[in-house]
Image (cartoon, rainbow, N blue to C red; front, side, top):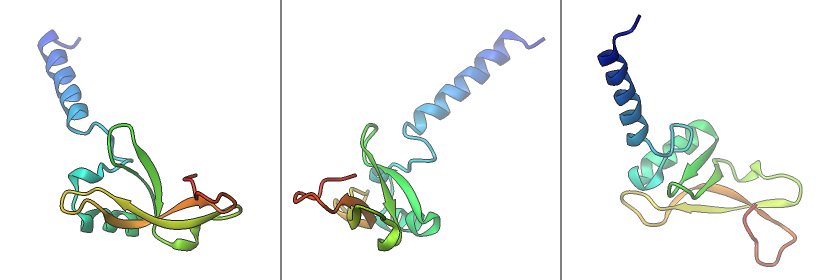
Length: 103
């Protein structure tokens, strides 16, 4: 049987770890990273979901030819620790829309 003090300590550790990484490991939080780090993550993974805030995120691709069908690629600029508009890779936008809205 686990002791109550150990359970409370474990619960506090888990909660503290979650608070330190609000977005999660699968969605790197770009404002906390350098531009070079963001570009490195995209290059390493090829496709990654980047978070620019706790509620705003988008899929970014390393290759501009990753978009298919009725979408095309457009540059993806993300806010980073050292640059407000860091070129991170490419995002997919609709081809048939004059405004090129994000898809």
